[in-house]
Amino acid sequence: MRETAARPAAAAGSAATIPSAGALSAQPIPAPRDRLDVDRIRADFPILRQRVRGKPLVYLDNAATSQKPQVVIDAVTHYYAAENANIHRGVHFLSEQATRAYDGVREKVARFVNAASSREIIFTKGTTEGINLVAQSYARPRLKPGDDIVITAMEHHSNIVPWQIVCEQTGATLKAVPISDAGELDLDAFERLLTSRTKLIAVVHVSNALGTINPIKNLVALAHARGIPVLVDGAQAVPHLRVDVQDLDCDFFAFSGHKLFAPTGIGVLYGRESLLESMPPYQGGGDMIATVTLHQSTWAPLPAKFEAGTPMIAQVMGLGAALRYLEDLGLERIGEWERELLAYASSRVSSIQGVRLIGTARDKASVLGFVMEGIHPHDIGTILDDEGIAIRAGHHCAQPVMERFGVPATARASFSFYNTFAEIDVLADALLNVKKMFA
Ligand SMILES: Cc1ncc(COP(=O)(O)O)c(C=O)c1O
Image 1 (cartoon, protein in one colour):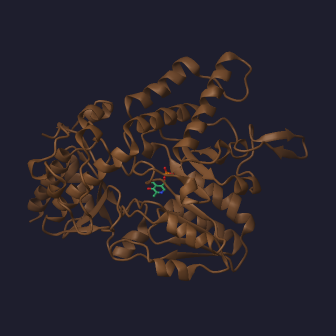
Image 2 (cartoon, helix red, strand yellow; image 1 turned 90 degrees about the vertical axis):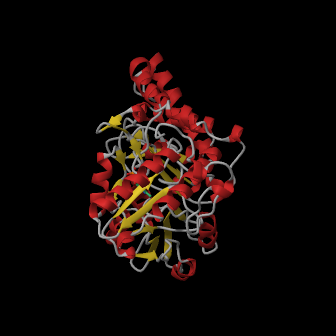
Image 3 (cartoon, helix red, strand yellow; image 1 turned 90 degrees about the horizontal axis):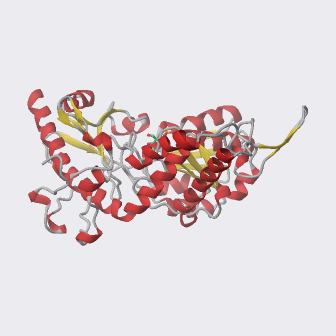
């Protein structure tokens, strides 16, 4: 049962039989030919064949990092085995080949997020670095005492701390948009917070702690009507949603490869070309210069201006393979499957007495945060681990969210397209067991 993608009897059949939880509505089930073949997909991920503590691994910690398909592992191995050379520097065959492949992935990323040009795609080591780059290179030179940066109360620490640092450096003030009990942004408060002193808005697309999908397009429109640029933390969005930066009209969009089935150590910062052009380099070093004398230097054109030093070449090859893999599966079909998983999991887990879901927004991605009365989330995580089930327990690098909901921590199951309904049954049964142990 747990090794197959089959839907449990209660949920098989028609859309109407998919349980819905709270504000989560069941989605129509696409015709079989359009659906993902999850059994076949699981075979692409070698780690999913593992047993953990004698049990088949049930990996439900995808919001922390995703697993890697064999094609990504092969792309990294192939680079080291057959193509390894530094890029942009050599005149020899291997270097030219690696340079072509590296630059080719940048084109692929630009298409993936529909950037107007690959000059707008900066390789970073992850979302965190992308946000820090914007804080230091865009915001810092523009901020003065009395100015504001606006974030929200559902941000990951990566989209809080860089702004606190830059506010400390410049005398600007950091303000946060409050969230409702369901974990949705208070849009009236958002508008009220925007003033002539607001110099930038930094907002998460999909909350890693709550699963909330924020209405980015609307937020950007409200911000741009006041001439305020918007950075989007897209770390949890790109694995689940099709992102079109031109349609969203955002000014910066940061994400991490490792949550997108690619290796660790690679990320992307999309930046509107006119803004990137206006910004000084973030770091100095090789590859980001046009000329250097002992007294001064001039900068390389975009995107090299923001990529000092030897970049993460092997990881970029892995990212390219991950994007190819995702495009083959189809993000729309991935989204459908994950919505069904989330609806089923929300229904099963919330029906356990004493469980409180943390994050019940109307529009959610596949993140299920919850607490169980009288049981610490770490105990839940440890007992589940004995069953081979990997979930996350803690504050999820979102301590202000925990404070908002009056809990020190939550347990979080987060789903990907390779997860199955059978795995959700294993999770729910294990949670019932946890409850019995603490009864
Ligand atoms: C919403 C969100 N933003 C930012 C980050 C930071 O990503 P990274 O550690 O890959 O830089 C995470 C990671 O969990 C996240 O979930």
